[in-house]
Length: 240
Length: 133
Image (cartoon, rainbow over all chains, first blue to last red; front, side, top):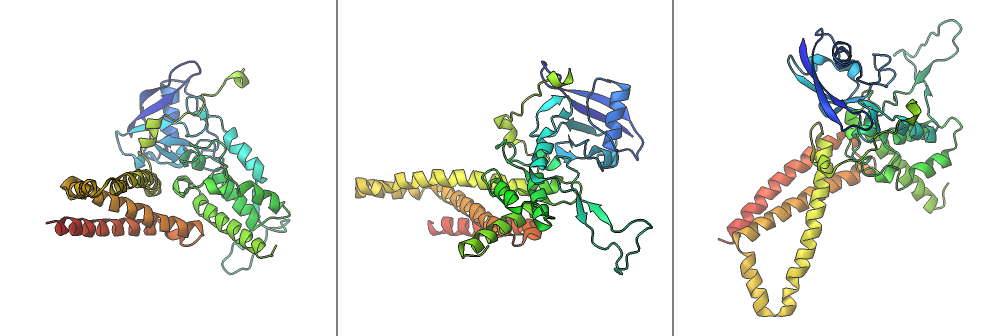
């Protein structure tokens, strides 16, 4: 399948521009394969992040034709023979070079919450009879969120408020409050009940649309707003 | 050294706010709220300026009323109604989902708001233009 890959180029000290490269990839290829083809066949100075190639590391997040995507699992057949794929770095994060952004925007935010990565697993079998492999006492399950940052890129509010916690962080906070596991709940409430927390969200739901793993951060933020509201109401009437 | 490289700072040019490529229906609602809010605020000041004609005297007010019956002003009235419907109906949607009510159906609520806006805008336009002829 023949495609054109139009890549955002930026090296420090130069003006940003686009370079377009023709590539040929199998029909079963993903956008990341096309990008790697452009790198291998045309210009090895193209800088971009990639690791697992199967949507478990979250490092390859990009804009493909102005939409946030994980290119490792975005088929080229979504765009058609002869299409031009416009590839840009994620929005709302400083660009280091070409398609590589300063991802500390992502990690510093998750650190504020406490980065929940494991949750108590619901029973996997529909009949509730779980047979554990030998040596295993319980199942654990990682949170869906890859910390890929696509939601932060998609969020229009991130562009207006550099201190906004962002959909990923707020969804993680909501998740932690649903299952605190000994965490300091008051600290998390103080963090999110803030002008740079939930109240900065204006419900565009672009984060939910961008999320590749159905975390649905938009819905999590709405649940968090409700939690905060109910908590304030309870306290107003003398509850705890 | 790689750590000496200063990243290109995030600076969104104003024109980029009008790049709607790749944006979905929720973003359109977000933009619609902001544009309708600006329009309604501008209308508020215009409305106060117009009402101040009452303080000038009956002739000034009668002159304004004659102007207000002109087709261009009637069209502005229809645009005002559209702005009120967009802002009001989407505002109800945002209030509900902000309380965690109907969040999975937020797109359905949005399309309902769009349909109601279109229907009532057409009815209002028909009423406004037929009343004056």
